[in-house]
View 1: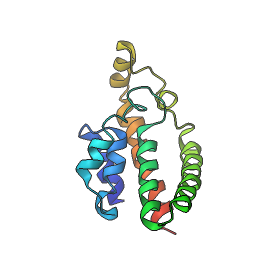
View 2: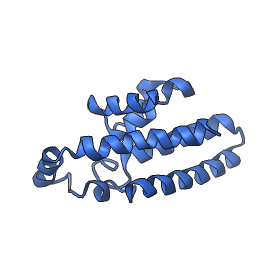
View 3: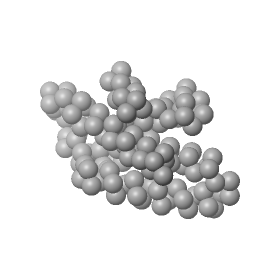
View 4: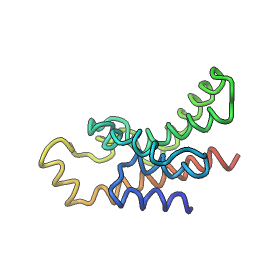
Length: 147
């Protein structure tokens, strides 16, 4: 639960979804949180505010890739394991949220003034994004550490 809360607090402090998920794993996986923060800076709001794949999901995909790269030395096997885990993660996340696409999750266009106003007025960041961040961490923890 600590990691989930850490990720959600990171999001509340203004970090994007991908930053919040990936940096929550810096300590247990032994990578540089500043580099992770920088790497994921453009992945918020569905990658560059394109509202495609949710940042919490892309952050989780990065965690999965790092996990398998450390665990499995042979590149082809590591890649194959990551593909399977990403598919499993996507299925689980979609079962909870109905989609992995930011635009579908938020149901507003963040590239318009109206969409940005709706995001703020309806507290979609707190209601939807923060939940996606927390759920991504929960799903990752089950996949990576409960087996």
